[in-house]
Image (cartoon, rainbow, N blue to C red; front, side, top):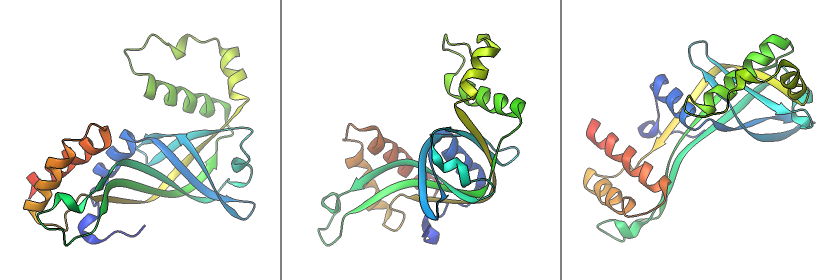
Amino acid sequence: MFIPTIFEIKDKETAYSIMEENAFALLISQHDGKPYATHLPMVVDKEHGYLYGHFARANPQWKDIGNQNVLAVFQGPHSYISPSWYETQRAVPTWNYVTVHAYGKLEIIENQNELFHAMRKLVLNYEGSSQSYDYDQLEPQFIEGLAKGLVAFKIKISRLEGKAKLSQDHTAERQKLVIEQLEKKTDENSRMIADLMKENLNKN
């Protein structure tokens, strides 16, 4: 990923937080000698530096992915930035966004206990404590049946790249003008970018 220094996320904890908050990732590998990608949820184990997820067994990507070096893309909020928001029209449109790329070797989980653990962790991670659904109350036979349709995997993260393009290459005054316009929008992405821009300005 092309990352000008001014946009680089250097703090690993920040990168992990973005991954956790935007965990529906794009997993890219080679399949039959061509690039292949699947959108899927992942669980981030930042303590041990792993990503966990699973394919539908019918998805052919898993069949030749074992031990490949793969790329998982975690896309955060993003928003169009109009030059009409600036103090001058002598400018061009751009896009502000946050993203993290995680690289690593993928390993298919063959051990059944590890597979069940990965499935449980994924479900509990997204259900939360306030939901009525209780994964732990499911019958073992039911879970085993579900597992037959899945192929679980883990990725040992070898490299993280993070980018937060938040108009840092413009003056503080212009950034404030952009924030003001983004806050007028009703979509969540624009408002999240506005919040991130304000946080970034307050750091400086």
